[in-house]
Amino acid sequence: MAIPQRLESLSSMPAEALVSAKELSILSGRSRASLWRDVLAGRLPQPIAIGPQARRWRVEDVRAYLKGGAA
Image (tube, rainbow, N blue to C red; front, side):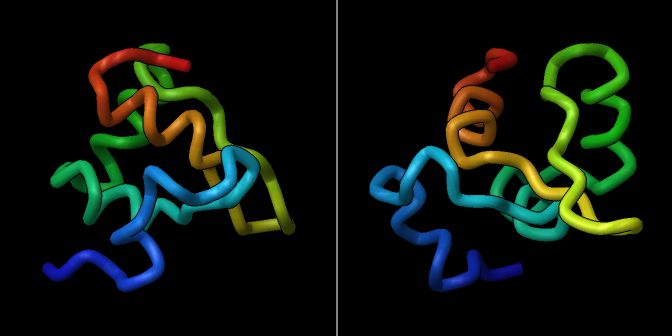
């Protein structure tokens, strides 16, 4: 699956920008279920709740996760 255009410049996005599970799944090459397992294991921080059923991760947390470490 192709990387969404807005995420092609992840390194220049503000640290407070938000990334969805779908986008993070594409960036990391991991399934959404694997992302949630990583949250439970402490490899990925808890996402921010932006609504009753919507969760997003901060770009700074995503950058750290993609580099192999938890933020």
